[in-house]
Length: 105
Image 1 (cartoon, rainbow, N blue to C red):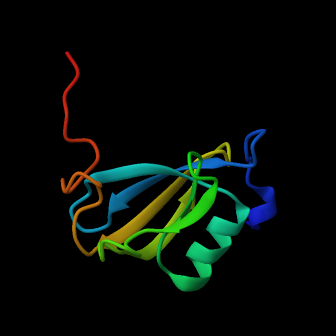
Image 2: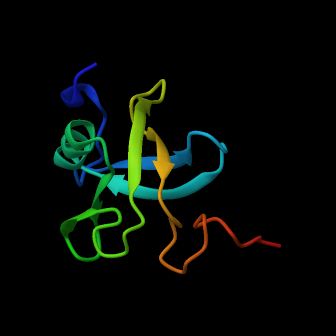
Image 3: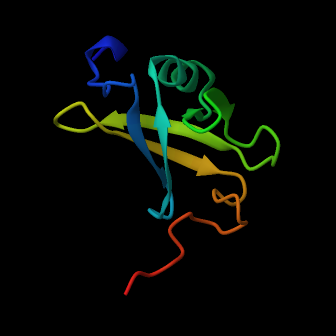
């Protein structure tokens, strides 16, 4: 499949779930646009689009908590991505291993 065949939303974004390839833990969810997908595939490290800052962010650029890409998958509808990664440090900006560390209810 080609990047152009992915189904981006009206803002040109697609959600990307990031999962530890060895442990199986879901680490985070972030948004990508076509350029972030391209950079991620080419550089084999995760790139995302920040909706709040309206700019690219390279995971780990300031924290050092990088995510080495093993595989980038897409779902059956081509409207969601799954990045299987080897993380180097926590995924969450709070310092937690995963952004999903809280329980609702």
